Length: 289
Ligand code: BV8
Ligand code: ZN
Image (cartoon, rainbow, N blue to C red):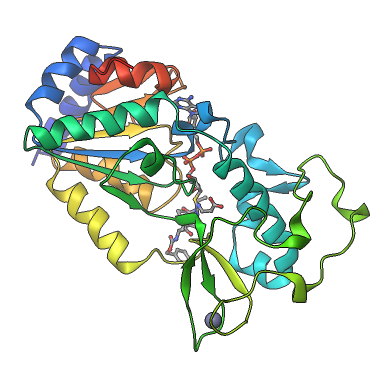
């Protein structure tokens, strides 16, 4: 690797040469790549109408989303956390993939025809990549349509697309409602395990919880072997996902970011495409929708 002096020069040189909206330059790199990794975050689903995780979209009633996405919040008030996830499930199940999801699915199919690898590592839990037709998707943080039994002797993992997931949530979940003047939800009315009848939880990785070992292994293998990485619609603040693109850079491989923000999340990214990814991504991938 570089000596300290060389690495400073390399960084300055890279920052000076970072290509903003250089679609032609990116296409050359893209066409030559044999093993493409794509890391997506909430921004890739924003144009489908799904609120992003931080900023204005990051609140539900008076709660910050990330304060509800914890095992402590669920233990303290499972009804409140389940109502929050009922709200998220309802939005996800009634939303449609947007052009960013579709372009990724079509480009994956093109790579498969050409014998090239194409892997999506998503932080999202909305299932929209798969509904757009993407096949090779690693869901780092679980999925809204899955539930897991809380009984340590059972741990049954199930798929569940019921909306609402149980009767008590019908006409509930409205983020504008004042929670305190709604009828209290009794724990006995919350979703139960099909096998042992105990309480189930959303199959979601909450803050402070480890990611599934096999999922992390699959993601690491993609990060360690790719020869191009696209980072799409993420604020790159949540670990361990936030470590992936810097690791690709460390390996000397190119990284291209697609984000609303004018400034890249990392000075060292090779390409940055500011704007809505529903517009920039199909153009960069050369996909006509
Ligand atoms: C773990 C499921 C080991 C929930 C999620 C201090 C320092 C470093 C790390 C930590 C720390 N303290 C704690 C930690 C660890 C913690 C963490 O990283 N915290 C952060 C907040 C600092 N991580 C964990 O706990 C992870 N586990 O580390 O295990 C461990 C164990 C015990 C103790 C410590 C460590 C588990 C993390 C998983 C959390 N679960 N999701 C749910 O969804 O309900 S993460 C959650 O954030 C969502 O999945 C979301 O996807 C993800 C990341 O957010 P983004 O996707 O980036 O979304 P965001 O809104 O932030 O940004 C949207 C972006 O899109 C913006 O940049 C915007 O500009 C852009 N955008 C918007 N619209 C568009 C667009 N771009 C293009 N086009 C558009 N149209
Ligand atoms: Zn069970």
